[in-house]
Image (cartoon, rainbow, N blue to C red; front, side, top):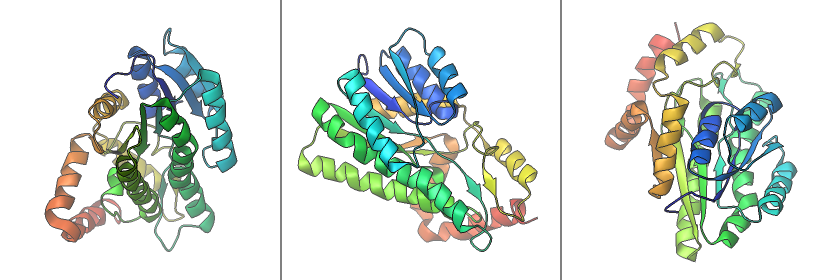
Length: 271
């Protein structure tokens, strides 16, 4: 996909954060937009701020498998084709393995992994039929390294990474007209930390303040990086200087990165 003008782009979680910033930038590039979110008010605001581009909005809970498949068919019917799916919707959970509940574990996996997997599979036939498709799945830097109290989030984001990297190879080996990219944002100044679920012994205020200090990148800058990565057909799109640093740390040290993360966590998460 060398240009975006007149392409049909689908963005989940478009009501705020990176999703909304992506909607704005895709609209500016001439895309026809199918935007979805569970937050109706945020979704309407995002659509209204996109300007004159063709925009349709859809209320969608990505944890609902049947709803995602119905959504894919509806978008294809509404627009006549689908070129780009950005599976961006996500949530966060901070809790130790011992303390997190089964319900919270299932909640985050249903949204952060199964939402991505079902979104990919539901739209893939339409992307192939377009003759010029692209799948973009949002993982995280926590899909590159393990972090204490993020085991469930790690599980979901590592799973997104493996699923997406395997899919990219399949599309290439099968000769399908679909590119595939996995996005690994670092700290982005969004509301995800404020909306996160917390374990019973977590200091929620301290966790959120700590995240705010580490959030180095604006949603707008993140969207620019993602769009550039799409147009360059990058397999791994790193968003933010912290993402580049974490990726380099993992590549250089392998599993030996863990003592460094443990030291940081002892100071910031266990005090």
